[in-house]
Image (cartoon, rainbow, N blue to C red; front, side, top):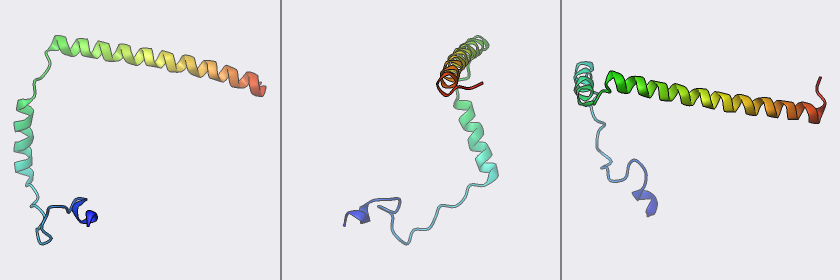
Length: 82
């Protein structure tokens, strides 16, 4: 039946036990090992990325604020606000 081949239990023997939990020390060592693999940005790259993100956020704030002001004015004209 198709239902038997789907879901998380597909392909697993029914008697299989759950995997053991990782100890905090092993987890910490694995985290440090993964962080060593990361290619960290230089200071110049970090500054340029930050400026780009802040610029984009400011542009989006201006767009949303402008649309809010326009829609507020429209609603007040339609429904006769004070």
